[in-house]
Length: 232
Image (cartoon, rainbow, N blue to C red):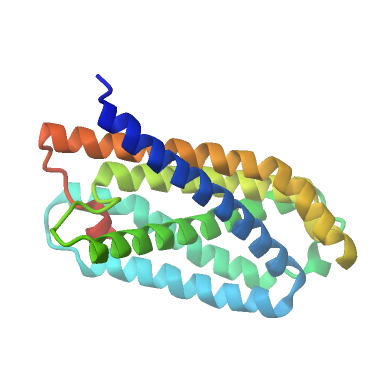
């Protein structure tokens, strides 16, 4: 049964999720534009992705405590995302605008889907980490973080994967990167008309679902592992 507290807290979390989804949509698409048209930013993000992916893999496997196959299995999705971010860094080194100008979307769309997924993943977990830190700093008593359990982590993982892939798909299909410099802004605005609703819907749904999982785990007294702190 849905409690009044869940409706209130879920509404607030959903509203915050909508705002974050729209912001992430804007940042992901602007990042894809900069990577496509600027050699400096493609090099910068390439190095950044490789470093971030390496840090994620290091944090995952450096905290291997020998808990058994279950613990290793829980780390595999996050390790796959870390490898995906490193792959995105390698793609950035080859993603010069003139190399892909005029090529078929069949060739470009998968590359931008990978890049979009990596940007959305890194940005989403940076935001979640920041929110957990700020909430923990502001609260006097020890309280449960905003995203803590394995269920919440995997939900955010799946959503960032979906969100980034959609943004990259729309970006590649609409050929935003092939526009001349003075038309890129207009092309980006046209693309954002499709991406803003996606970010808002997914962000709002994740915000409410995250609050629902938190309440269910508190009500059932579930002792799920702290997936976020251990893996990320």
